[in-house]
Length: 147
Image (cartoon, rainbow, N blue to C red; front, side, top):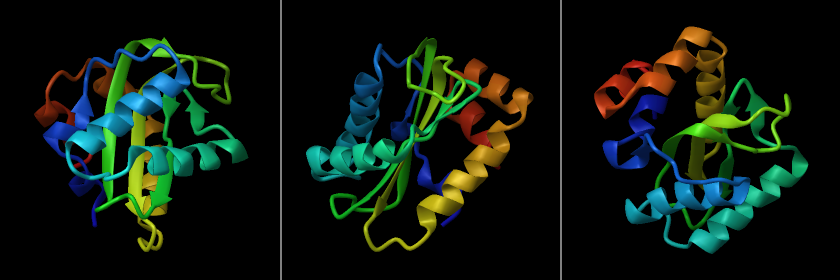
């Protein structure tokens, strides 16, 4: 599955309300629950937090890419969120995160999440891509970044 196919208009939020890392995770997980991707938010959040214990997925440059594998995930999906104010996400560079990509994959999904993580990370190394994402206000503008 191509990374761009893991997004839908319902899985994109251009105005996150979260003020903390936990609120950001809850907001992104809620997007996937409402879209029918996750059937047990508590189980999925535990998978994401277990991953976060290894080291923060706040990779710096204003980016966080939390991810989890769980039987509570119905199909590989990504929720995107943007926070203009930024969220303290315990990032490697100690700066707030503004762009969030929550990758959710079923337990049996092999390396789907790793491919998505790699593609997103590669794209976001470019400041013009990060700027485009910060400025986009529609799904059409957003998805062009991944085409």
